[in-house]
Image 1 (cartoon, helix red, strand yellow):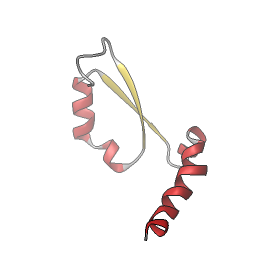
Image 2 (cartoon, one colour; image 1 turned 45 degrees about the vertical axis):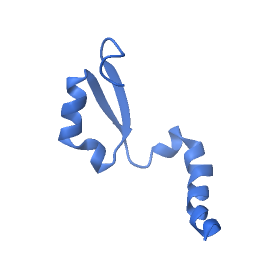
Image 3 (tube, one colour; image 1 turned 90 degrees about the horizontal axis):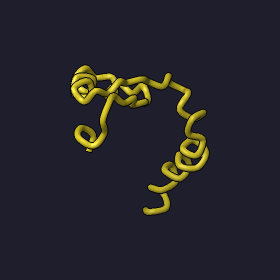
Length: 67
């Protein structure tokens, strides 16, 4: 999906989880002409308010509803 379909370089913005900052991921994406930028911790909710306000409570309640 990532390599052949898009010409030129790309920017991928990820949250700052440890797994997203792994050198192996950066190496693979670098070969695909992809620049990485990371969102600082605690800032995700500003850019994704639905994830914080709706999805988080839903995901927290889901196991109890299904039991």
